[in-house]
Amino acid sequence: MSSNDQINSESNVNYLKEDLSEIMQYIQEPRLPQRAYHIIRTAIRNLKLAPGKTFLERETAELLGMSRTPIREALVRLQTEGMITLVPRRGFIINPIKKDDLKEIYEITESLDGLAVELATNEITKDELQHLKELIAQQKESLSKNNLYNWSLLDDQFHADIIKYANNTRLTNVIDIHSDQLYRARLYTINNRPTPHRSVTEHQAIIACMEAQNPEAARLGMHSHRKRALFEILKALEEIES
Picture 1 (tube, rainbow, N blue to C red):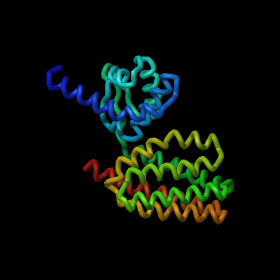
Picture 2: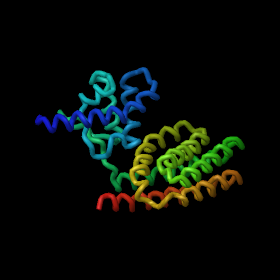
Picture 3: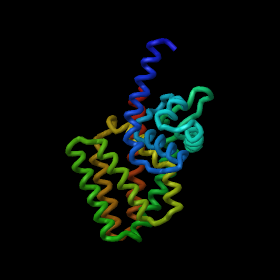
């Protein structure tokens, strides 16, 4: 390795260490393979480990303060979930965000999210409805400040809470398999899409259907919401790739 390559490598490691430090602080999982998995998965989800980039297994182990064994277990699991690709003797590559993959994922989650909001409409309490309304108010405030990152967090929380209110553990587990990929795509394209005022309006319409105890209308509203989001994300990906 040349001196310049070594300097660049050390700079990348230091940069990555700063990015991972906050994530490492709030993940309290004591089992090392699980801890490594959640740290790396969260970093990929939040684009701290950028799509298409290659990372060395040895350096990752050093950054997380672990041996390579739990890191390897975590990476194998992440590869199974489609988040990374292991490269012999090189480490791992963060899988890029591909249009065909997103289409397939949205086809699945459109139906599952529709089912979730339908179930949640039959179960939801007044306090839970109020909570969702407060999330929408916070989304509006974030957009007024042009804080798209915070809006993304609130948008993700809105959908996650509706899924939680469906009270169906198996449904939650299936949706969770794809949730990080969806969030990563939304965050990756957020600056190339229209400011999401329309998304907030659609959220309000969904809540109105839930409050009116109309599960069918809520489901249709969610389907329409997801279809429109996919269209915008795919268009943004085309612009980024061109």
